Image (cartoon, rainbow, N blue to C red):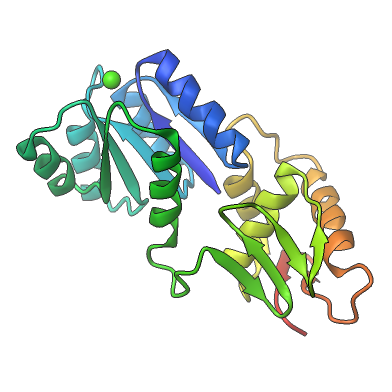
Length: 223
Ligand code: CA
């Protein structure tokens, strides 16, 4: 899953980015409100983390502009302020949740997971298909009780497949949600990663879960 962090304080932005990347999210950072709005509008993010106090355009203005332009990406707003009016203004601008600075990183992660579950029918933190389970909190994958060791990118790919079961995913869509802004989609690296993942989860099993859709991309489904 791919996250946009809009935060002008570089130390804080780097701290959030590193923490999220350790949890296998792909992360882009914008350091001001104009750039943030432009990236939020032009790229395909699964979630936005938005600081309120920003140069050029503050978080409230940014969110209002983004929502009025039909932007639907779930957004977690960061605020240094604790007054009720500020929280209300944040939520009323179109943010889905807020977190007051300073925050514990574990809480930020829990809110990120919670926002990613919204709009999804299955609210469980364990994603599954057939006898395959992926725990999005511990990052443990199992197929039929067998533990599968995944690299960070394989985990991200499997999570994306599981959140989009039965949906045919093009290489472009996959790259937009698994890799950050600097990824070159001209390479065959997606096929390489899908093949690695496929060997790990489908290897040795009669029931294949990752299927190639010729000329289009891939789909995760039973049978
Ligand atoms: Ca700030």
